[in-house]
Amino acid sequence: MELGFTAGIAAIVLFGVLGQILGRATRIPSIILVLMLGLLMGPVLGWVNPDAILGERSGSPSPTLCSTALCAAGGSQVAAIWQPS
Image (cartoon, rainbow, N blue to C red; front, side, top):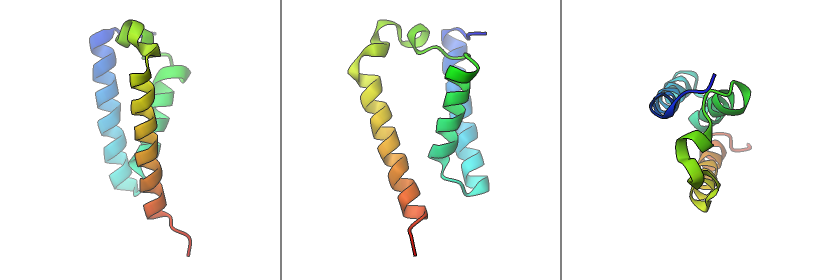
């Protein structure tokens, strides 16, 4: 079941906020939860299709650069929390 444009954007925002709330409640870095929820919504359940939302721009460098920046920020967040003793 693939969501339409508006429902896809709403689901992305809703699951992003849910990941942030769960991250604060469980003290797990929120980036890990958000990435897991994103994988669940996209490849696993097929709810969100980047080609349907972004159109021809889904293969452009912008989403790739944004994803890279997000992962780098998440990695630094994890490193700041789980420093070796």
